[in-house]
Length: 478
Image (cartoon, rainbow, N blue to C red):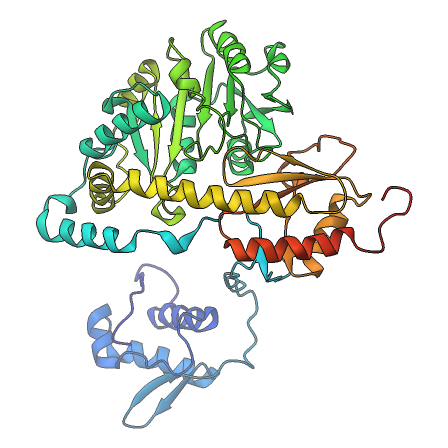
């Protein structure tokens, strides 16, 4: 160690040598100065702290006497092993960060039907690498500076065009804010809206949004779902003025909110000032049957829908680029109070994405992913339909997961446990419910298929069939 900084106060009654001695002792006890660390030389440290070498010598010798430091002739002073030193009143060490595992009990499945996984094998590495290299070489120093707080204008303009043609969202680039993930944008939105609001969220639903709301101390109303999504009648009591919903593919139940239900929700939001709908369109790119249903934002004519989208599903979760479209009134609030917040997304990544979309690579990649995911969806549906007992398939027409209502007499807990024992991880719907679990006669299991190969889907489905429908089922319900 060349040097360390310590504040020594000559005005205190405690002698300088004792102040220095206590500081070094605490550093050793806390682990900041580890075993074998060489302390600064007396001459250099005395000069650096502007104290006499005699003062420093006294401090060092006291540490040597107590066994904290060892004096090695012609080499200097080194931190000793202090395992046997009594540390009275020492602050407990900071616990090591626990590495995340596949499950709380370190279960590593052979097959994982995670609803958040995507197919990483088809990421366009070659094109992305080429664009990134060209961006760094050609864009000079400009991308190293802070850009516009809402995100670079070229990217926002490209996103605006994409949303218009793909989702019917009519907006200007000025209404778009680019952020590092949906959660980041959602927390910014809470500041824009203010805390004097009550939120209604789907139950079951996206647990991260619910946790963010609760962490802010915001009142949350849980909205039950029916076969068409949010039960709008539950909003009639006027408790909530803001609704968070995933209408294009409800997470996790998988239903697509039909147009008539969307119209009733828009009617509710227009009945009173101060009401808004937050539309999370997280995986709207993937629809496998029927005509595309317009976004809520595309049907809204009064500026009451806040649209949030992400590129995590079509590209990569680690890219951390999402976007939010603000209505005019909220945009004014943002520009008045929050425009000083810097963008949370790297400008280099923004420019690479801008070129990826502008040059047509994104559309080609998206079409490819649709074909791949449709094949996987079809493979899983076909495999489930071979199960020997009745199983209802829910939400298979869109998104990257589907649900199974299993009627074989086993509980959700038993279904998950049997799958786990066989090496397959599945997800019970109760894990996505907040506070209360909607009652139902049959358990519902969520299966995400995007992260598995078609061969793995077949193999995992066979294992589930054996685990769930073999001998040992309840005789009165099987």
